[in-house]
Image (cartoon, rainbow, N blue to C red; front, top):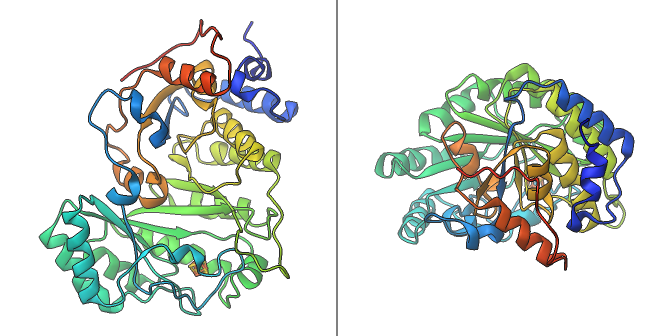
Length: 379
Ligand code: SF4
């Protein structure tokens, strides 16, 4: 008889004391049994923590390999309640096409392989890239191997086609499924249908399209997430990135609660079931501490395909659940795009899973723990 997943979790030292909902775990185990063998077989962890254990040449931290560049510097007219434009502040500013050309040349000299190109939005949640398309084309013509992942925000057909013609490699946009969230959190007079139409326009181009769903975007509560899944399902992008809201900058008058980790787990389960063939990636934004441990454990059990910066114990959990474990030793890769651009290629680095598990256990002060019975897959 197969062990229950809750018992398996109970035997993983770093997960000692983790609070998981037994009904959700049993449900996840049952649904997994009904899935095809390929679906959710492989999981890739993205973290610089495993660097010392990799056996081949490694990429540096995603931040220098994948800089984030903002065409508006730190400015954004929308000032959404969860962000207040703070996400833009640490990015490299390139406010003019000339500055963008210069920045890209400097970054390539410094070893960058690509960039996330973004900027603050206007009041219609559009990033005004118009003046930059010829420069983007020039960059792609001069450095075809340099990848550009663009945060598109909302687009019409014409803008989507201009993005495609400029040579951008991947298009990323947040998909919001609740009108109240659009109006209240984003202060935006656009409709949920505008988000879906934007996704539709992007998927009708040759761009790799990777929508994001921000879980808990409605002040920490879940509202439009399932509708957003339906929207994604209707338009078949290349992958879906899930992140959990981290509203560090929320104004005191409009506070966010920490999203309920069990609800997040249920959402992962539903996402996997609704989109069985789509790569599902958990980006690095999520609440820290115990909530992160719970969220990550649910993500592994639900069959997500990639997790950035996993909590301790996740490699062992994945191995014990007989998932094929791969590691990409870089940070921020999901958020900044290199994972997305590598989709479909044979990515991931050969690692000794058992050594990583030992390291995790050492961190959890359990140096004598035995590791027998774990199926270790190296690539
Ligand atoms: S539009 Fe983007 S950058 Fe501007 S405040 Fe909202 S989330 Fe932040």
